Length: 267
Length: 276
Image (cartoon, rainbow over all chains, first blue to last red; front, side, top):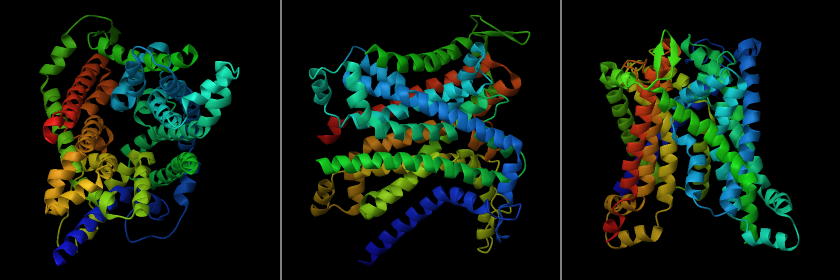
């Protein structure tokens, strides 16, 4: 019995250590963003918001934040539309080469972003897109479409195909059936995908680093700051980014969660 | 159908397949008086594949990514086991939600925090000094790179392993226990084989992510020595030799295809034999 308790204790201790390793960088970023001292170390030098003031007084950081928000917004809208379309095609139709079709759309996250970055840079350079926010968004959409597709496809798995057929039989055009039945049913997933893809874009730094040129996004600015000296401003930016991304993810989660609740009540 | 089917595939074709194809084509181009010129030369391939710096970077990156996949898998397993079998469903759900958080927390910022933890005056050294240990210096060493790779991969590995273990049928485990199989033997002979697909998948992701990562080897490893992703970035940003950078990128893609194929074979291969 004693050995059993010992083993159990060791298991819990190891789990706690591992979780500490995973979460310590996040927690410390937030805590030390409020530390008055320049070097993030103990002892605690007192509560201060001076690093936040410094962040908001820094024009390059603000520019980066605005650029990131623009790119994230564009990515969210385009990627969610394309992701919905791909998910609907996968749900509705059977055709030759469908596996290749979906695989091709889903593949980009499997390619290292450093490679996507250089491929985008050289290719977009030819189109005159490199160095523009449009160029960054184009790359982020490629990366985000699979996530949007997955979210909507999971939702569509709960939609009985007969419901759309019933709409057709009642005289609805295919278009009316989609806009009147399928899209309303998928709305929570579509909204969730808007928030999730925005978060994916908002945190992406490698494609943006290659493509953005002088139009830095916020993560690219952070990478540049990392090259310099220790700057507690990075902690403040990290905390701000954390709050923005987590809000997006929590909203997405709530939207998906509602779906789960409803479908479990229905059955 | 065309209205829905064409836009997504067109987008991914135009901005994913074509750029990658362009990347492959560019490995055969040449740089003449600082200008990229379409060509059909093997010179870039010959240069890179024969270059000592490429070979050592390739071996180094591969070894470190493999080591990371191994460390991440082994260290996450006891925690995944705890999450899947030893915790209340409520706690488990909460922790799984928490484990999604790192994916949406700026990875460069997490690396920055880790850098400060391990700095000479950092928290780690401050904690172990009273124990008479240290100071440890992992910054700008391969160990630092692996620590960074673990920051990147551990959340995903732990999540995937937990899902894999949660899908193991409880009856199977109870049956093993009833038949007098010890806990440790149950893990090795029942749980690991049943959850094999998920466990291999987790290790594969760890390898793929670390193999391509740029931030950890640069900021925690001090690019000392450089990894393949650092070679790419250097060639592009300073050297401006895109064809050579493309060769490095294409060798990385080929490597990942081979590794993923091998891991899929490991995950799904010989299943019937295992069951019989």
